[in-house]
Amino acid sequence: MKKLNVAIIGQGRSGRDIHGAFFKSENNTKFNVVAVVDALEERRIRAKEEYGCDVYADYRELFGREDIDLVINSTFSHMHVPVSIDLLNHGFNVVCEKPFGKNYEECTRAIAAAEKNGKMLNVFQQSRFAPYYRKLTEIISSGKLGRPIQYTIHFSGFQRRWDWQTYQGYNGGEVRNTGPHPLDQAVHILGFDGNISVFSKLDRVNTFGDAEDFAKILLTAPGKPIIDIEMSKCNAYADFIYLVHCEYGTLKATMSAIDYKYYDPETAPEQHLTLEPLFTAERTPAYCSEKLDWTQEHIDISGTSFDTAVLSYYDMIYDHIVNGAEMEVTPYQVLTQFKVIDQIRAQNPLTTMEA
Image (cartoon, rainbow, N blue to C red; front, side, top):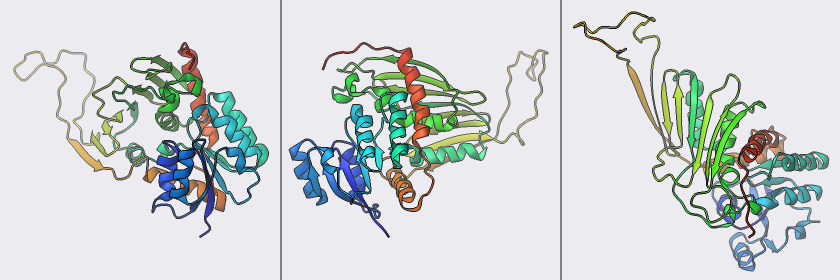
């Protein structure tokens, strides 16, 4: 099997602990890390020990190398688009960490650079392959629960943060930092509809930066369910990721388990609208009451967004580069996400601070 040579820009939490961890794992049989870039000398020293590869302080030192098949752009979020465009213009295929960019316009410029240079550009939206998400979409698609009415998605917890991802100048904040995961899943559920309605509320609660750490977002499209997304750093009782209200039942999911219950409409008691008063057997006033035969199911989920999903994502990238296969995640799909993000930002202008 042909292996692809990879360069990773950045050895922070994503570059090292997600991408690098995958490339060093037993799951990786298709990629070799041949170069790592990081501005910090201690990280370069560590990378040389961990990967046995060439190391550089500046990504532009990669220019001219002809042995690199793919570059992973794990720079700071505000650098994603300019660095990706520079790499594409110098003949590299690029996987860009999320968020894709700052706004819709920035992202379209990156896509244009990829098309102009005939190179692959993709965004690391691996949560599309998360085992819990794949299983719940399979259950909903089966029709057991009937038509989905509302998806409630919580990516929440209680946390105080003071790192660069709380600073607007670096494209920080929950919408661009955590948001690309639930927002990608949401626009996927809505079929990447270009006519998505958006209502949102952002707030700053426990952050030490100037970006939001609370986001409530409601999305829907014609003929589609409503999606209620919450990303909160002030929810100490967050106990689920997904709650799906459906015609015949309900599904509740965490990243490790899914529970759902539903009834069969074919075996349910037959009912008809009545405008007459309802009575009990004793002729006292009654409320609508019936016994439904519930089926309850539980599924344990193996694998996470940081192992199984990463493997599936990079299998997709490999098959595209080597075999020309279509990609399940595309930059144009992520543009739909940024149409939503631009509306959220317009609805919630936040004051900024100097770093």
